[in-house]
Image 1 (tube, rainbow, N blue to C red):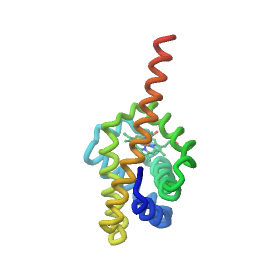
Image 2: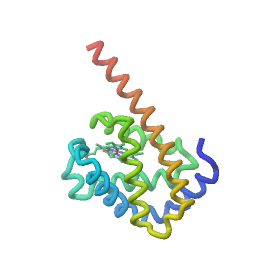
Image 3: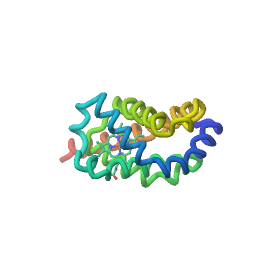
Length: 151
Ligand code: HEM
């Protein structure tokens, strides 16, 4: 459960995320690959260079902010991303790394707009979204494991 206060604050950041989303996600990958260069291997680096992956992540972050009070509306987005994550062997342990990089990038790009209140709300909201992905990806990994056993 996300608190109503968090929902309200995160939703109020949707317009600024629409405007600055890609700057934030470009910065996020910069921070993440600097701190964890080994993670580059999981990513298609040409999709980084041409900006298509930062654009996809920015859209997802914006959609989450805009629909945080209506999570079922995000189901098809979550499905698509979760399948891509399983294909690229994303693990639950990697979520805090992405989260830390994303939150730092928001601070860097949003400056004064990234108040303590905004950062606290986004920390909670990110945790909730990562749990959604981790559970769904766990089930997909499980289904794939079963299929392998029967093939
Ligand atoms: C809540 C957190 C996250 C969100 C919102 C998110 C979002 C996305 C989106 C929108 C895509 C593109 C899907 C597509 O259309 O193909 C994607 C792909 C991907 N994500 Fe995530 N992701 C998250 C967490 C993570 C984590 C923790 C990792 C760990 C390394 C990760 C690694 C990847 C990789 C490797 C791809 C494929 C990128 C490529 O093809 O270069 N993501 N993610």
